View (tube, rainbow, N blue to C red):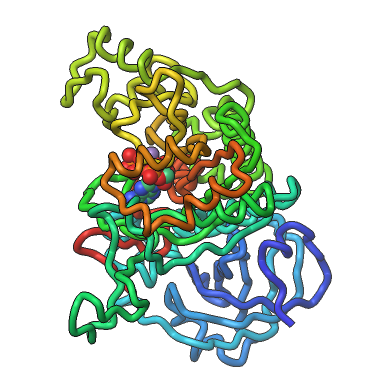
Length: 452
Ligand code: ATP
Ligand code: MN
């Protein structure tokens, strides 16, 4: 039975005979014995193995072990006399499972740029930084479910293939068998695409089960070459019945704080790596986000602030235009210096399902902006009034017949309800300090690129 290195370093069972499996990170020969650093991916820290001449294969296999080769090591765990590690494993047996040629192994000891590593999605998780991202991402995913489950939210698996195309106008990937002969000959009897959001289907379940959430892959064929956009990303979308915009925003704030705190508590070693090498001051920044209330501002106030500011923006602002990332980041980074909820956007720039405010010009929308990223959450209270919703849909040129099911939710037992979408990769970016979103998803899909 193998023991994970994370647990060996945590429990330090000195005197016990243990077996570890992993990959060689570095090796240093001293003549009659070698120091071999092994990583098994369970933690950032490696286990130091002492391999001596008494091993049958010492001269034939161990001295020539290259970085990246895989081994099974058994031996006794002892206290380490040297600085740098508390314990070390004195090997009685090392089986070399797979060699790695030192000449050609692409991950040499020097530091590689993230751009370079992107060209080898299949090897980059073996680096310290990308391995740490992998562990933090996994922990955050777990914490998302925990956050909702302890609050009695029901998880809904919304479809990946969808026939509701109103939201993704122009952004939806089409799904086809390639065999269709005419426009009426679709596999599903209707044109279909990959989902851009699970919201409309989450609403169905919210209006039956109360508080629900979906957490799944989302696809957008937008041709954005930015550090914050992917063509395939994961989104967390809670939807709550009997819930207005205020409670919606409260949940979003609670959730972000919960997730940041969870990562800091359960991924200390990895978070320290990010704090030291990726974004200096990251932990202090995240701690402040957890401890302070988020700021609030309406869209109209935001536009006023932006137009009065002395800062030169690439895109000019005026009431009615969508804010660009430069505007969002100015507000959260320079004006408020903390996460900021912007509410009540013009109806004309927001989707048909957002609830129209009494002024008839704005809708009950909320975006949450964070320093370094800009928009991390987009949400709203949904339009629950049948006539108002129909009016908005007609205005948007949507065929009401296609959305009869959605309108039924307003015909039969309609209630005020709200929800939001949190981009999971933007969250992982915020938590790890990674500058580019391509580093926080294992296999990034962007225009022109989909390796592995
Ligand atoms: P943006 O304005 O940043 O492009 P959006 O307004 O199009 O985002 P929404 O439709 O509100 O995004 O989606 C909800 C959340 O999903 C966003 O707040 C963001 O966190 C995330 N998100 C949206 N598009 C992408 C993308 N292409 N890649 C990664 N995450 C995304
Ligand atoms: Mn948005």
